[in-house]
Length: 219
Length: 44
Length: 231
Image 1: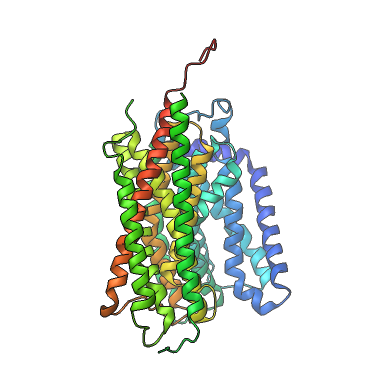
Image 2: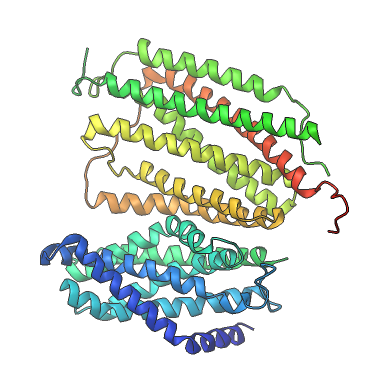
C-alpha cells in the first residue's frame, strides 16, 4: 500500500521537476535577499548563515507543500474535496515522504549557495546533510497535514504558513542551532542535543499527524 | 520603601490598566455578540 | 437538534460577578496593601496579575485541547462550541500575558522582550491559536471546520512542552538571566485572589462565548426553509 503510494508520489514529483527548479531559484533568491538585510559584512553573514539557510528553506517549503495536493484537487476543486484512494494513511505517508525528500534535496542544493554568499563552509558535510534531513522531516510531517487541509479552502496560500510556522518553531530552532554549530564550530559537542531534539520532534509529529490525517480527509 | 528599580509605579499602573481594559473590552464583545444572537434568534 | 445547553442560564453571570469582585479586591490588595518587594520594588506588583493570567491562559488552552479530543471521540457539537470559546479566550489571555510581560520586562531588563522561555512559548502559542481561529473563519462547512480545528488544536497543544524546552535550551546558551517570577510566601493573598478572579472571569467568558457559538451552529445546521428554492 505504502510503496505504491510512495512510488506514485515520486513519479509525480519527477514529472514536476521544473517546479523543483523554480523553487530552488526562489530559495537561492531568498538567501541573496537576506544578505542585503545585513550588508556586506563577512563576519555577520557567516554568523547568521544557518538562520538564513533555514528561513530560506522554510519559505520555500510553503511553495512545495502547497503544491503537493494539487493532483488530488484537480477534478474535485469545485466541491472542495480531495480525490482519495481507499487508504488515507498510505496517502499521508506517501506524500509526507515525497515532500521530505524534496525539501532535503532543496536544502542540500542550497548548501553551495550558502557557502558562496556567506562564506559558510564546513568539512562536516555528512553531519550537515543529516541535520537538513531531520529538519526537513520536521517541516514535512505537519506541513503535509496542513497542506491537505488548506488545499480545500479559499485563501490557502495564507493559511498554510500561518498554521505551520508557529508549530515548527522547535524544529526551526534546533535545525538552526545545529547547523550553526556545524559551520561555526562546536567545541562542547552540543550538536548532539539539538539532533536529539529534532529526532524527538520528528518522531512525535510523524506518528501524530499520521493518526490524525484520516480525520482530516474523511467525508 | 523602594527597591533597586526606581519609579516602577508607571509600569505597574500600565500593567493593571492593560489587564482591566483587555478583559473589559473582550467581555463586552462577548456580551454584545450574545445579545446579537439572541435578538436574531427571536426574529426567526 | 440539541446544541444549546442552557440548564442554568444565570450561572455565567453569577460567575462573572464573582470574578470581577475577586479581581478587584485582589488587585487592590496587590496595589496598595502588599509591601513592595525587596529587590524589585514596586514593579513586583505586576506579578500579582501576571502570574494569575499565565495560569489561566494555560488552563484555557488545556481546556481547548480537552474539547478537541472530546469532539473527535464523541462528535457532539457542544464540544466544538466550547472549543471555539476556549481558543478565543485563550488567545485573549495569551495576548494579555505578552503585554504584561513586556511591561514588566522594560523596567527590569531595559528591553521590552527578554526571551523568557515561558513568555516566548506563550507568544508562539498565541500565533498558533490565532492561526486556528483564522482556519475556522475560512472553512464554511461546520463539520469540516470542527474536525480540522480540533486536529489543529491537538497538534498545537502537543507542541507546547516541546516549544518550551527548545526555547529554554536555546535561551540558556545566550543569556544567563532568569526571570524571577516566584512570589514569596507572605504575598500570596493578592495572588490567590486574582487567580480566582481571572479564573471566574475566564470561565464566565468561555460559557458565554460557547453559547454564542452554539447558537450560530444551530443556525448553520438547520437552515431556514427557503421560499421556492431547491436545496
